[in-house]
Image 1 (cartoon, rainbow, N blue to C red):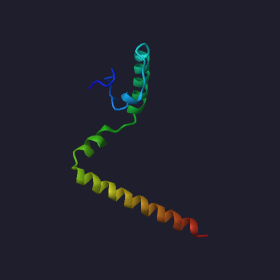
Image 2: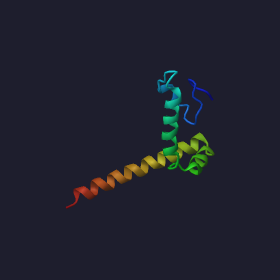
Image 3: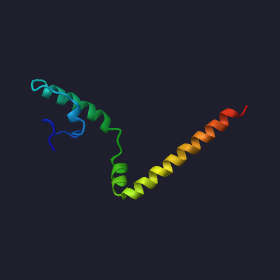
Image 4: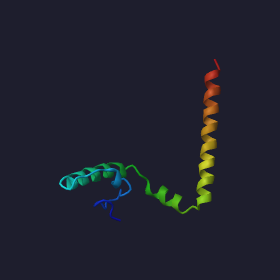
Length: 83
């Protein structure tokens, strides 16, 4: 996919980056360096596993995560209220 003359791995962000034609190459190289820095911390297996799920299954996971977060908040409030 080519967006605004950029066809790297992060084309979603390309429209938000204003690049003049003479600075395109330098900006592209800078963007690629940032992307490469973040890539090393991304677990692709988790992304692939998530993409295998149906939309409903993803929403179920999201709701479970939200319930867990609420439980953690309750437990934190309870722990702070005790002397």
